[in-house]
Length: 149
View (cartoon, rainbow, N blue to C red):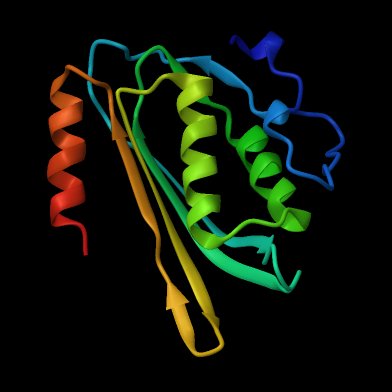
């Protein structure tokens, strides 16, 4: 998506109050002939426990190797904010985020980590990754998952 096709940049920010994957936007990767990492860090992620409705706070880390499309950062911020009133377990949040970004961009490789702050004395750090099937990125995903700590 070119600059004139992005709908969120330069406009008043409207925060969705419910889970909103439709706010995600992409633009074209200008360096498609090269593999490189893009990383986002969201230290103020919030979602609700689906059982108690208590807030869960986390740092969400997203890293990917783009192919043709890349996620636009303001749309990603608004998307992550839309979890604020969404009830989902920690592991679900990480997998939902990853699945939505795969559907949006079709990256070569992506990983999402949730560093959820303690509640009840326990921290949970779910990690999910994906490498495009049948490619070296599938092998990268298996390797990184096996070595994940």
